[in-house]
Length: 243
Image (cartoon, rainbow, N blue to C red):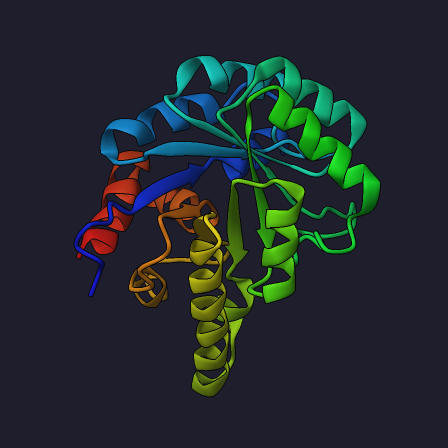
């Protein structure tokens, strides 16, 4: 049962609208239009990942999204050019993620504990600019504590292993790790979010974790939007979250 005092937020990631656009490198479909359509249907924020290789979202998209949406969560690795774009645009939140050019999508959580001075400097710059910093991490106690030590305000737990588990036992074990990490993060004063691989079939168990305040979901909503439209896809997910 969802905690009665909690309002669970939905962040809609529009990266893969840009993926379809970049296949032809033309103007459509426009991820900014997709984000605008998602808002009245129930999106509490929009998420966009400005990658170092600019494979989908572009710098201009980030600038336009900041003007068009209520709340922008910019995912990013700590590449110098991407940091400068974030400091220029000033999204409401930056979510720091690991990134490799050869990966299809973000494959795991950021190693905050081993991030070193470069990560610490990036966090300080964002905090000085009054941009909320979230760490995209695996459900691991050391990474949660390291996020607190660096001054992050939030963590987002990578739910990919849970979503892709091949057995019921494996899924339960992953879910237990997320539950424990969420409880620890909340006890240390962090906002708690979750995302990656979540869809209509697997999101319910994550929704029931009372410390989680926000789900960030992209691929499954965009995939559904291709068939049913963005407003319908967002409404379906938001209704399941509320239920």
